[in-house]
Amino acid sequence: MALFDKKECDICGGKIGMLGNRKLDDGNCCKDCANKLSPWMTGRRKTTVADIKDHLGYREANKQKLAQFNPTLIAGEDSWKVYADPNMGAFIVSRDKNWRSENADVIPLARVIACEIERVEHKKEVYQQMPDGSKKSYFPQRFDYSYDFKVHIRVDAPWFNEIDFPLNSMTIQDRYDPRYRQCEAIGDQIRSMLLSGQMAGGMPGMGMPFQQPMGGGFQQQPMQPPMQQGFQQQPLQPMPPLVQQPAQEAPAGNWFCQNCGTQNQGKFCQSCGTSR
Image 1 (cartoon, one colour):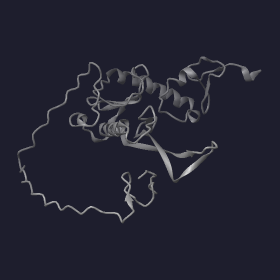
Image 2 (cartoon, rainbow, N blue to C red):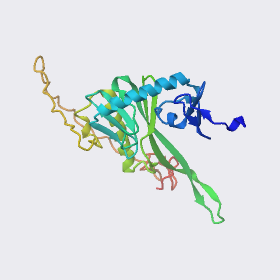
Image 3 (spheres, one colour):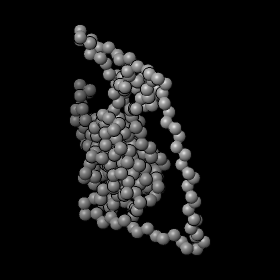
Image 4 (cartoon, helix red, strand yellow):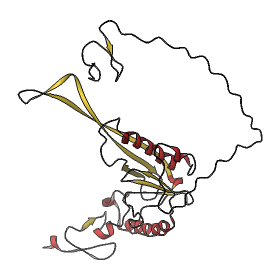
């Protein structure tokens, strides 16, 4: 019978209902207290009760910082977004439009160690459908490719060191899909926001401009002229004449694939499978 006895939360002292216990290294935690933890915190089961209490104290203090957080730069697609406040020198990552209600972690930009954009390529073979219903590989083999983009941010923070989230909400089925280039541009914007320190000016001219929060007071600062002291403009050097190379011709009966440039003899490219 003791197996089904209600346990007590070592954090708030409340009763833990059935299936509501979240194990800690040296105690128990109710799901309400667990929901207050940072989404970037990992290893809860190996964390002590004392550390969880300290972490929840940090989360309460974070609410105070979040109340003063005023982002003027936003980069992201239709799910996860990175918000930056240049005046505070901090950023948050959230997929909730009401990021204050979820108590998104306010992280100083100075604590960012690295930011990487990962392109994940999915490769799936395309088969011939035979009259008997079976499938047969083409020769050479043909493949369909799809893509996902992920953001990996490394920070030197007390309670977590990694922030990982997907950049696109739906898999991109074609490399020539406009969303592929859009994700590349957004990834560059996020890296610029977190690493370059150029929080205003210059970056909004990229492929997909930064969004401004509704009612935000973002103003792009005018560029300052270069310092006159010791500055001399170098004259432009003439470009060397362009020598046009003769076009490469394939031997009789051969052809070059327009997709990958491979020289072929048959009807299909032996490298990528594109027809002649």
